[in-house]
Image (cartoon, rainbow, N blue to C red; front, side, top):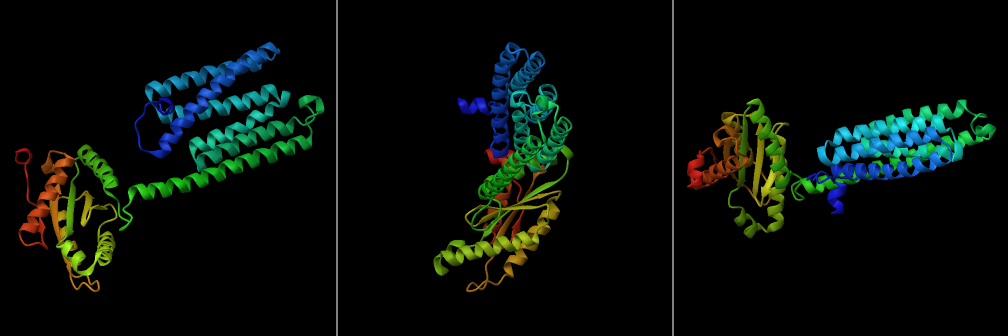
Amino acid sequence: MLKNILTSDIETNDSRLIRHLVLLNIFLSVSTFIFLIFIAFNYAVGHHTTAYLNFAGALVSTLLLIDLRYNKKIGRVRNAVIVEFFVFFIAFVYVNQNTSFGLIWSQLFPIVSITLLGLKKGTLLSAIYLGIIFTLAYINIGVWNHGMWDMIAFFRLVFASLTIAAMIVSMEIALEHSYQSLELLSNTDPLTSLYNRRKINEILKEEASKANRYKTPLSLILFDIDDFKKINDYYGHEIGDKVLQALAHKVQSEVRGSDSVARWGGEEFIIVTPMLDKEGALRLAEKLRVTVESMKLEPIHRFTCSFGVATLWECDNSTEHLIANADAAMYDAKSKGKNRVSDVFISNDAEMS
């Protein structure tokens, strides 16, 4: 239940997006609670202007929390939170000055900005914000707190603020490295370093959506190593793994930069080829077939692959049918003697029967 509340019931596997959702819910919930407390406190001690600022902050935070929960516009709410906190803290410092050490609250904005906007945008906006805060603090030396706000206090503010900001930046850098490592582990096959099945399915759906939207071609090439079990049985699994690695590296170097290659499973591989029609995909598959056939890998003198080619237009724009067609074409190539390319067509009706 708590997880659903913190993520606003938004279903996603994007770890960065989940983090932003949790942070937004926490920032907005906590800030609303604190604003409400200080509305009563500041009004009671006679700081009416500050109380009105707190009321405005509480109102905006509450509305943004409702918007996030019901409309689920993450980007809009994130940007609005940044604007809200930026304006509030500068207005608070301007109005409250450093009464009762109010400047301590100004340290919160870099945390919100950098964690929600990322390193580049967040650090830049934090620098602008701190520049404004430091300017206000500098021009009011000897004025704030009836002269108790002196140069030493100013330098303490500057060094403390920069230290906190540097710590937040360091934490974000470390977190970004962790995200990259996790993303690499979750998206790639550990043996071949190609995309794994989960990632290539995501890519295929994205490319199919683009192809349907812009009426552009999209083809799929599915292939596997002929008699791979015999290679494992005769030479051992270590050699079999080397064959898979060498094949993956070679195929990756032969395809276009816009193509995506993945290990589909076992000795099967898949290539998503956007902006490539059936004829182009067949030429690419034949080129790869010849390249694989000519590979030299000791102690194996020769190994081959069978290729199946399918295009989206013949599959009623269905990625499932596209994969099924490519799979059927690959097995057609195997049934006709292996080491060849096939583009056998299977209709939807034939597949369902």
